[in-house]
Amino acid sequence: MTTNLATYSVVLTYSAMAVYVIAFISFALDMAKRAGQVTAATGAGAAAPEERTVATVQGGTVVLEKVGTTSGRSGGGTKFERVGMAMTILALVLHVAATVLRGIAADRVPWGNMFEFSLTGTALITLIFLLVQLWQNLKFLGVFITGLTIILLGIATVNYWVPVVPLQPALQSYWLVIHVFVAIAGTGFFALGAGLAVAQLVQTYRQGRPVSKQLRFMETLPDADRLEVLTYRVVLVGFVLWTFTLIAGAVWAERAWGRYWGWDTKEVWTFIIWVVYAGYIHARATRGWRGARSSWLALIGFAAVMFNFSVVNVFFKGLHSYSGL
Image 1 (cartoon, one colour):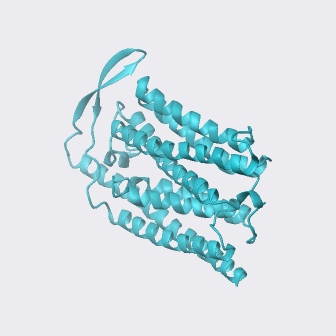
Image 2 (image 1 turned 180 degrees about the horizontal axis):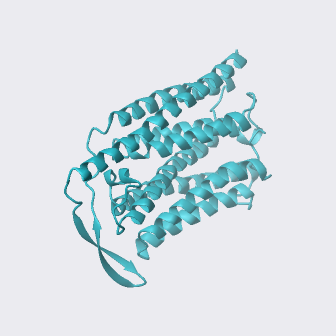
Image 3 (image 1 turned 60 degrees about the vertical axis):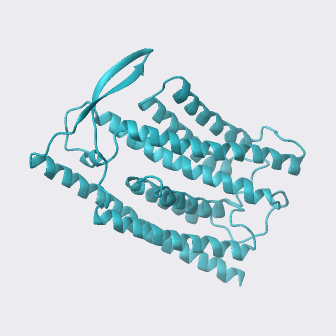
């Protein structure tokens, strides 16, 4: 029975990946469609984007510059966007079903090794992306989120899959549910922040330059200032969750090994990630970091998260070597 459920979980995982690919293509076509609409509107003599003055701080000097503003996207989006969102929801349903079946087969929470962690983590990243739409229209991140999910799931199914096995003694604790789940949720918000940071960097590059036919779809996205604010808010939520992860990990370490901190590789990298994002929040809030500098720092933080996930968990040995590989 356990073997059958694990097999069904794998089948559902591959099915979810196939639907994610359709969603990715749909979001990519949505970008191309909107780029064409912008080009057609410009060619038809549409009014130029309205300019506004933005104050920035450069080397202690306040600089005023005019930037073009964009009103953002229309409420409904293109048909490709709607197809992309529908396919993302369908893929998530299959994805969650695969995750639940894996948990039932293992008779525990489905994040006891690298494959299960990847399976649950990518599902939660996608779920957070969909739930955030209730707060803010971030559907333009669909290409980034579905692409990231496809890559991570592909790596997990090819390189990380292992049969269902019992948990190691150190993981047999309720802290596994709390600590790891919150860490995954924090990673989901960091992923959204990384996508927004990339969009902000592209908008910053485009503003102040002659109008080009390249990346015309960016004119339908919020401007660089708005994207920067959204990045900060999303990363701030992730930082709060990561702070709890760090604290909960220390408490769990004391219960499991009799000390709160031991400079294990995983502990060190979790702290490095916290420091990078703390530096990002501090620099932006108190040092006046705006524009490309803050976005690059957010991307460095997410790169550290991915390094912690893909390299530290697999190649570094220590007390946290629970990859199952």
